[in-house]
Amino acid sequence: MHVPDHFLPMSVTAPAAAIATGAVVLAATAGRPRITTRDTLLAGTTAAMIFGAQMVNYPIAGGVSGHLIGGALATALLGPRLALLAMTAVVGVQALLFADGGINALGVNVLLMAVLPVLVTAAVRIGAERLGLGKLTRTTAAVSAGLSVPVSAAVLGVAYSSTVGTGAAAAFIGELTAVHLTIGLGEALITAAVLSAVMAIAPGVVAWDARPSVTPVAVRRGLAAIGGLGVVSACALALVASGNPDGLEHIVGAYSLPVGDAAFAGLPGLADYGTLSGTEFLAALAGLAATAVLGAALAAMGRTPVRQGA
Image (cartoon, rainbow, N blue to C red):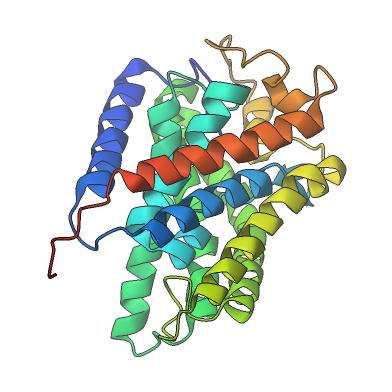
């Protein structure tokens, strides 16, 4: 769902950038809950894991592929505040290092892949708790993941609908949402599987795991499990990922929609994740490292000093 440069008019990208910036600043500077060193490490590691997972496209019907967005998963692992910062790191590194998603559409992509999925997940979580279903952690995460993908797609469809003309707008929005509804099923399964694995390996570490006994050993296990998933995804699974167009590319092609030239082609050797220069492995490692550092750095912005005696 990475929106490229010049795909949306400035009348859309400018407000989206303002909203996304405001959300990120709020997440980074809000005083509660206080962000700890453990939080920054988990945020950076989770960001890297989601970066790696997004490199793995899985096939769906009709010659289309999808990949994990990860907003719901990040929220279940980190809580909404840190999840927003981690997802922003993912989207930022993808655009600035690999030209995956446009520079002038960076705010749009943060809105679609960070802000909206986190909000949807938080809303589903609140609803589940009010219905007395708060203990159904994995189910809640899966439902959130499955909903967040088509919600973001529908918002993108509405934002772009004026470009395709009044007559085709409803069909465009419907088709874009429908294909991402199918992609969302994969998102739900992956989210539930990863969350289950991390909760089993590292009890009490993730935000949605209510077990109170968080030990240093559990934290180390959690970091190792999350980081290991990222490395395996980026360095192994990505090599056998589907080469079919993703949902947005498929709909853009079906409607013959214009896509402008990229404002930035990516860093040398890293463009298109190294596939153009045969440096896929190095590109994957660079992306994992950069995302981990940026995710931790954004989370660290929210750290507040602990007063003596507090």
